[in-house]
Length: 304
Image 1 (cartoon, rainbow, N blue to C red):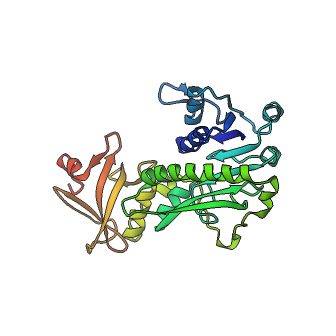
Image 2: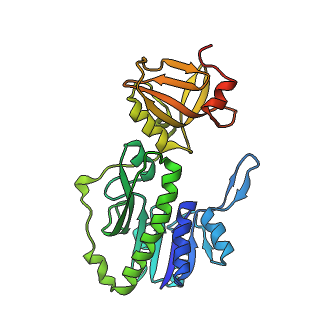
C-alpha cells in the first residue's frame, strides 16, 4: 500500500518504522517546518524529518496546510492512505483525498481524553488503565469512527515519560494492524466502523504553565498524580522564598501537617496538603540540576 505519513515528534517514529518494516511504500512524510531552537538558535529538524532523511524518504514541511502547492504535491503522490500520528489538525480537503481515506493514532481510549495531551491527563486524573485508538478522521477533532483500541494498565510508578514510551510502542502495533485491516477491505469499510459515544467524552487540553503550579491545599493524591503527569516535562513546580522548584517524583505519606507546612530531616522533605502529606523524592531548584532528595538536602534546607 502506498502511504503518506503525517507526524512530528519522537512518539510517531515507531509507527513510521513498523510501516516500513512491513514493506509498505512510504511516498512521503509530512512534518512541521524546521525551527531555530536553543540558545544559539540553530535550526533543527523534527524527529520525523530526521528519520525520513536517514531512510531517504521525501519530507514535506508546509507552513500552511491549505497552501495550494502543498495540496498539489499530495495529489501528485497519489497515495492510497494517509496515516496521522501526533500532527496538526488536517483540513477535510486533505484527509478525504486518498482512496482509503485517513486514520489517526490517538494516545488514549477514545472518547476519553480527546485533545492535545491525552497521556498527561490520564495520569493527572489518576486513571488505572489507558491505551491507544485508531480512528477515521472526521471534521471535528478526535471524534471519528474507531478502527481499533489497545489497552494497557497504568502502573503506580508510571509517569509521563514512561507511559509516553509504552504508548508509542503500543501505538505502532495498532497502526500496522489498522493498515492491514484497511488493505484487506474495501474503501466502504469506513462506513462500518464503530462510532464513538460522545456522551462519554472527556477533555485533554494542552498543558499550560498555570496547570503545572502545585497548590498545597489539594489532596496529596491529586498533587502526586499531577507530578506524575508532568514528569519529566514540563514538570510540576512550586515557589518558595522567591525561588522556583520543579518536582519530578513524590510519594503520599500520612502526616498531620497543615497545607504548605514543611517538615524536613537530612533525608526527607515533606509538604502538608489538604489531605495527607507529600514526600518529595526528586527535585530541581531553578538554575541547578535535578537531584534525588537525599542529595538535594545535603546542601540545602527549607526551614532556615
